[in-house]
Length: 190
Image 1 (cartoon, rainbow, N blue to C red):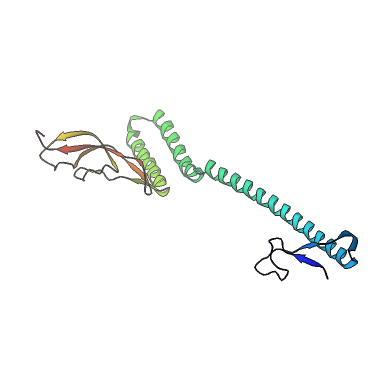
Image 2 (cartoon, rainbow, N blue to C red):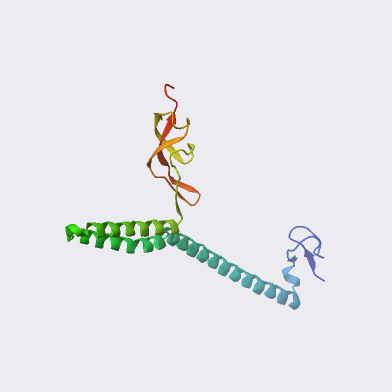
């Protein structure tokens, strides 16, 4: 019978381990069965090594592919938005061309066309998640979404309320893109 010792020092019954035992043999007393067992173990080790190499290569290829896909997603993130904006750009070009060739009575139809293009642009941006910040007069000033560019003394509105919006603000879903520029009310003589 052969002497078997575990790699981690445990007994031959495998108590507490999942490792295969190391076989200690005296080269002069190796039997045919022991030699066959060693060959079998060497074959298994080679198979496991090849499998490990293939899995490692597959994993490296997966990481490279995932990174490439991530870079492509970042690079082309605005593709769908731009596809929605291209027809609007075309309509603006047609409006410019019509304005150059317009007669005096065509001003009203040009204005109607430009208003339609503006509405088309606004709808495309809203579909992409753009939200206008409500900064109408009388609203309470919120420093998280408003930017106070000046204060105006007034008795018509409470202190800290918006008197006038100078520039619209926008959010992309719940993220602030640009705060609304506003004039804030203050008490006279304060």
